[in-house]
Amino acid sequence: MSPVEIGGLATGGLLLLILIGMPIGVSMLAISFLGVALIRGDTVALRMIGQVANDSLREYLFAVVPLFVLMGLLVTASGVGKDTFDVFQRLLRRITAGLGIATVFANAVFASITGISIASATVFSRVAVPEMVRHGYTRKFATGVVAGSSVLGMLIPPSLLMIVYAVLAEESVGRMFLAGIGPGLLLALIFSMAIVLLARIRPSFVFDVADDGAGYEALGAAALVRKSVPILSLMLLVLGGLYGGFLNPTEAGAAGAFGALVIAVLRRSLDGPTFWRLLVETGQITVSILFLIMAATFFSRMLALSGVPRELAELLLSGPIGPYGFILVYVVLILILGCLIDSISIMLILLPIALPVAEAAQFDMIWFGVITVVAVEAGLLTPPFGLSVYTIKSAMDDPTLRVGEIFRGAAPFFAAMLVALAVIVAFPPIATWLARL
Amino acid sequence: MLDNREAPGARPQGGHRTGLVHRVWRRAVDGLAAVGTLLIVVLMLLICADIVARNLLGSSLPLISELGALTLVVIVYLQLAATVRADRLPRTEILFALLQDARPRAAALLAACFDLAGTVLVGLIAWSTVRILEKDLASHEFIGVPGIATLPTWPFRALILVGVTVAAVEFLLRTLSALRAAASEERT
Image (cartoon, rainbow over the protein chains, first blue to last red):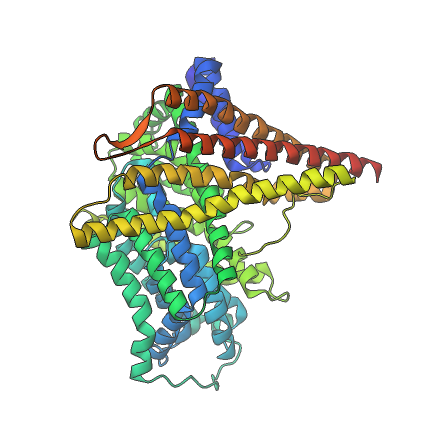
């Protein structure tokens, strides 16, 4: 067998193993070990697996993973999310389906202090859904809005997915973060338009009760300011520190986690056992992500040895498919995988193959990253495996709430994401303008 | 997301002797994970101290970036076994869940194969880490700048080796308990 054939078979084998349920990291290690052993012999494979396991994670930048995860979990526990929602609820209460739009924008702002979508989904399913249901919105719509807008968490900086992309594509994390802002705002806007449109055209989808009789909590200007202070100070700390040149991404993570800890302690929302539980959770999320990154590094080295990405680039770019055809195939592939696999795993499986092709096509790699992240995030909303939807289901803890109901509620937002994706493909400056400034 | 439910891999064990060994092993795995968990806080505080030193006192603390990177690797491997036991390694469960409903015994056998693969691969990582540790010891590998501050890398390497080895054994125990589950499915 030629190396290219081995690489091709390995890629197919990997997808098969993942599909039948082998842990994704273990599958990657197994396939890559076998691949390298066949191409270069088992001594090389053994040396490589040890090297990858010891050295591929030895990057100061990766310390950002536990720190941003911890920060996300801490703000989830500290009630900052509820305050953000209260503020937007107050500001938008005169607009049609204002609570839906308030959820979207509260998510957009909350996203700027958390880098994980599950944090957004957890917080807002507890804060926004009960409030929307109380005001006569359908539960399907209320949970759908939360699922849809939770994807903003990983698009608007800081963002774990952007960090993973930046690492794999060797782009600057700071630039990738900036590249997420435009598309994040665009998505929030398209979501809001979709909500207004739904409320006009299919009111039964949005409202149970036509006339909203429930009152709003009175919120004076002073309370409004008081509720905005914690989140604004965290934003200032993390994003201000990052772009003011005081902090590198890792430090922004540490400062953010520490700031979130201080806020949680000041608000008396954190006791010892809760803090320990959050730390343990942080550890497990960190291990599951970084173990995957380690395995994916091995996979991409194996692929590079096999020459598959080079051959694939030639085949795709010189043939009738062309660069834009490649983007289309790539996005469709991501969407299909998104039905089955979680976001970070999709990126780690596909990027080692797709990045060399994108480079050969001379794409703007920042733009390509944004497209990747948006497409991958759409997978958070698609059945049967949509992580945001399951997060909402487990956070709501309501046995009568069916997963299918949330998926149906999230469907319009999935469609809105596809629209946003098309707009970003057509107008790259939305993603790249700020980042290349 | 923050559930402390019993890991699906931890199936009931028979007999008192295995019970004791099992308990001690659990403690060991939990203990390593707890060290890893504490290191996350240490990492956060180290980096914050570095920020303060650089922005207020005008000079970075020595070693921080290299130490942070090594600490992170240690954090990951110390908690690997606990993560494996809690079944938190990402995987697709759709087809597997269908198989579990239709053919529980086949599913248990398949799970045993997965865990065996984990045992072998993480075992291979442990095996080749031994060589890396020996090399670090032999060549007095260190991080930092000589004359200012240095740290030998071997203690970190040793912790990585311990974590990886324990994770490999955890995978092995899961393999055995999956096989036991497959056998008991056959009897019922």
